[in-house]
Length: 164
Image (cartoon, rainbow, N blue to C red; front, side, top):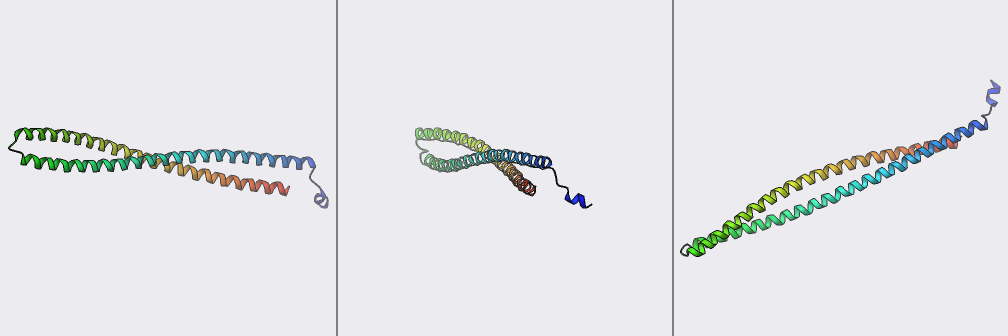
C-alpha cells in the first residue's frame, strides 16, 4: 500500500492525456466556430425577415393612401349625383355626367379589387414574415445555448488541462 502512493504516472501517459485534452479543446473550438457561423446565418435571416416586414408596412401605408383616394372618389361621385339632379333639363350634360359616373364606378371596382388583392397579399406576407421571425428567433436561441454550452465545455477542458 505504501508503495502505491509513491507510484508516479509515466510522462508518456501524461503526454497522452494532455494531447487528448488538447484535441478535445480543439474540437470544442471548431464546434463553437461552426455555431458562430450558424448564428450569423440566423441573424442574416432575421434581418431579411425584418426587411420584408418593413416592406409590408410600406405596402400598408400605400393601402391607406389608396383608401383616402377611394374616399375622395366617393365624395366626387356624390357631387356628380347632385350635379346630375340639377341638370335634368339638359340631356346632353346629363348623358356626359352619367358616362363619367359609370367610368368612375368601374375605376372604383378595379381599385377595390386591387385593394382586396393587395390587402390579402400583405396579410399573407406579414404572416409569413412573422413566422420567419419566430423561426429565426427560435434558432438564435438554440445557437446561443449551444454557444454557451461550448464555452462551458472549453472552461471545463481548460480546468482539466490545468489539473494535469
